[in-house]
Each structure stands twice: as C-alpha cells, then as structure tokens.
Image 1 (tube, rainbow, N blue to C red):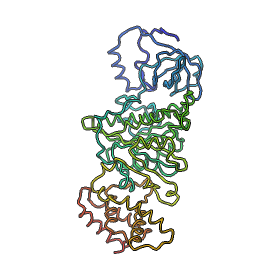
Image 2: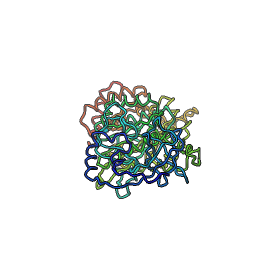
Image 3: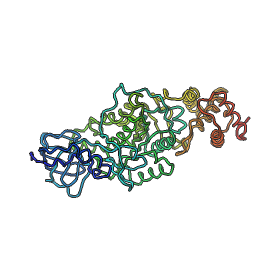
Length: 514
C-alpha cells in the first residue's frame, strides 16, 4: 500500500464525472464554476494500490484497504472499474473501461463518487452505453442532472396502487392480461417466439400517450441492436425513447450495469412526475453475465452455477419500478423484463425467480407459434395479478368471462378429437371459441387502439360474429377498424351507443351474415 499521496491542488477527481468521459463537456462548465466557488486549498491523503493481474474483464488490485463494494477504481492509464469482490489482501474489480496499456503494476486509486450517469430529457431519442456515452455518433447529451446507478427502491409510503392502464396495443394483453402503469410484467418464453416483438409493440403504442420509454439491450449482437434501433426510428418511436446498449462484445461489467442504467433514467423521469416504461431485453443474458463475473471472481457457485445473490440482484432492480403517490411526484415506472426459457421449461431457476418477483407473466408457447397463433401467448399460463385494478370499466365489463370461456373452449375442442357426438350448446361454444381464437390473432408491429378492442369485444359478446366463418374474421376486423377510426366514440361513452354503432358498421359488411 502506498499511502500519503499529497494533492495540494485539490484538482483530482472532484471535477470529473464518474465515468470519466464526460467531465470536459460544455455541460460541465456550470459544475466547474460551482466547484471553483467552493475551492479551498488543503492537504489530502489518498491510498494508492497496484494492479496485480487482469484478464476477462476482471482486475485484481492490492493496496486499497478501505475499498468497499461498488466503489469506483481509477487506474493511471485511464481504465476504470467497480469493486465487485473483497478478500483479505486483494480487491476484485470489474472493468468498465479498459485500455491496451492496462498491465500488472499500474497504479490504482479509489474514486470519490459512486457510479452515476447524467440524466434528463436530452437523452430522449439517443442511443447510449451503460455509462451514458453516446453510441449514435451524436454529441454528448446535455444532461440536467446526475443519478446513481444503484439506489434504494421507493419506500412504502411513497407508493400508490396501480390505478392507470398502460395499453400495449395487443388484443390479448389489453383485454385479458392487462398491464397497469407501475406494474412489473414478465415476458417469458423460448427464443424466437416474439417476446421482443411484444415489447416493441408496447413501445410503439406509447406514441402520444405521454410515456417515456427506455429500451435496454443486454448482450445482443450488433445486427440485432441495429434492427431494433431502425425499427423504433421507422415507427417514430425513437423520439420518446432512450436505447441503452451493452452489446455481446462489450465488457461483462457493462452488460451487468446496463439494466441499472435504464432503471436510473426511468427513475429520474418518474420522480419528476412522468410515466415511464422500461424494457429489459433480456434478464436471462444478464443473469449469465453475472454468473460469469462471479465465477471469475471465485465466488462459490450455487444452483445451476449461479451465485447465491442472483435473486437479490434482480429483486433490487425490479423493486424500483412502481407507481408513486401524488405527494411523491405521481410518476410511474412500468417494467417489462424479458426472460428466456429452454424447451418451454418455465420452472427453471432464473424464470421462477423472476416470476416470484414480478406482478404477473406473459408466457409464449412454441406449439401455439408453430400452429400459426400469433402472438403465441398461452392465455392459460399467463396472468396479471394487479393490472385488472387499472383496467377501464368498459373493457373490464366486456372482458369479464372471456378468458374463462376461451379456456373452456380449448378443453371442449380437445374433447372433439375423440369423435364424440356433441350437444348443440357445446357445438355453439366451440364455434364461438374458434371465432374468438381468430379475433385474438394479430400481426407484429401493428398495435391497436383500445377503442378498437372495445368495438370487437362488444361485437363478439353480442353474438354478432357467431355466424362468421373463421377465415373471414381478419377481413371483417380490418373493416371494423376503419369504421371505428372514423368515429368519435370513446371508452367513456355508454354501451348502448357503442352497440348501435357496432351493429351499424357490421350491417354494411357483406362478409357478416345478417
């Protein structure tokens, strides 16, 4: 340990940003002026350690006896990292910035500030890395505030009940598995079943809804990242969205920090009274990255080689999503974490952890996907525990028994495979169920307004579509959508007015038997 380094000019780290890349930006002029007003010459003592070894994104440092977990370590070559493990003589550091000059023997010292990023409206429409550095080729954002990546979740007295709906644009979700603002709803399923598409639909559907979105991409290939950004731009969703990217080639430490960066951004807007939506795509990769870091740091492995605290890491992240009371700002943070299953195994370690943390899950099934039911949401295994509280009364009234009736239809349809003779009532239930299944189908990237959801539900509940052939459903829905778009009906209008309008629209369609 080399102790006693004098720093008489007091000009070391106090005027630097935590990530070290943004301190010289013009936005720092005000901070520099503030620092200059409070400048006082004094003698300062600091520890100075030495890098013992480095590799795979992990550095071991000696000579920093006062280091604590999550402290920031700065190396003389410009590299920096975060304290992740402590032993009797060494400090395990996860690198967040690594230069080619970082070698054994490089001097290291502790940073004065915790890890934080700049936050503010300047980040809307931008693509940044987990340290807040721009990745879209633009200038560094002029952020109005700073916020630590790690902070406690809001206290119970600050929280309010989920009482406003967050419309996803999906027929199944908005009617049967509703999501409220401030809710944590898990998207779970095998790879390639449309989990990210559902999340993107939800982001696109927030246009004009007054919801700021943060899309966090963790450990994905660059091609997937580019596709996501292009898609958001093509649908004019990037203007109210911030994309946080930690590619698969990024340091493991950055991939670990990415969801916390997205959460810190959403938290800033939530505290300001804004409604926010944050997508974590995906937490399976995040858990694997954390397992990789833990094994490199020689922590004892637990179930499936994950460290014992993986549950608390995700709980600490997701508990920060909530709906605040008006006295605490009145904002909300809705979280849609995505998790991957293997062969549909929903009882694996990470999926069960996240199911127990969140307020519900949307399960996507491979058999439904292969059978042409898109989105491949398994309605029986999906649930929203608190979203119903936020559902509009008109939607809740129409959705009433729809989920139960649909599940009963699936059982009846399975019964017909044995060739049994059916009663007339059962045949009618099966015919209605098949129409309902066609009604639930929806193309990706075509989110639908909630008023249209109400229109087709009224048509179905009133039996106006019972005689319709299932293959005619898409065409009828398209015409119904066009008629509804030209009307001025809202959810607050009475059911009789909606009934009259829907009957009138359907009466004009040749595909609907009268």
